[in-house]
Length: 287
Ligand SMILES: [Zn+2]
Image 1 (spheres, rainbow, N blue to C red):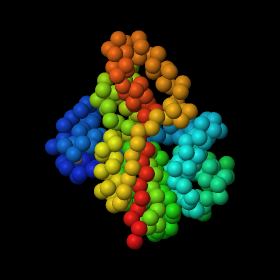
Image 2: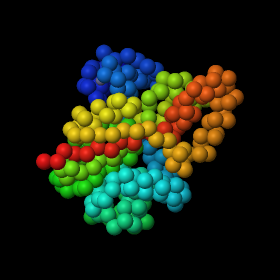
Image 3: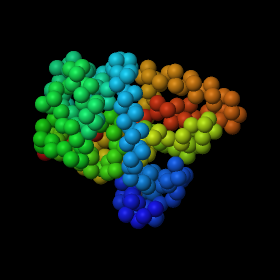
Image 4: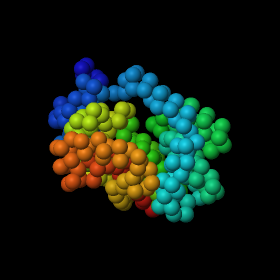
């Protein structure tokens, strides 16, 4: 691999040479840094972008059912944020949070690099064009100290520089404002990768380049300048999503003895890396 394409640790900045290789994912090393961060060494490739486009196409076809499925989680997020007048979302997904924010009369803004997703949400009148920035967060010119809350739902695991993205989001947040983010929980990553391979699955979802644990996501928030933060492990299974997925993998897993033994010791969703997420709240310092 040419030197210039190698990625340093997105958390502590240590050179990739100093990290340990956990496994090879499609021939590219997945590294574990001495600071505890796990990350893919490669930059995003053309093929990954094509795959993302397929993913978005899938969104479009199943938009109404996905919107319905995401409603409960979106309401939980807003309940957790308490009373907010204005909210910025980074990465809109199917627009579930936009829909719930609108129902509560919240002044909702968003940053979303994917034109197709923006068009879809505009067509369904979930978001407003004049309150939408179509670009990556790193290139956005957001108003300073404008929002009561910023939400990044399943975003940081995709970004080359998650700390930079959080720093930019923090600038847009009012002093004392709240940030909320979700990332997949990678606490049992190596166990999970081995189990998933035994089940004929890829080690992790395509498009993910950063793999956070409760410890490293807290560090990421601190590095971005968040004064206080709170992280908890949540299962989407319990939030009424992914139930069918969990039972599918549980059935598959029960056919493999070694996996069955492990699953008696760990929660099935966390061990297999499905529907296991880290939910983090942070508050920006008051002046
Ligand atoms: Zn590191």
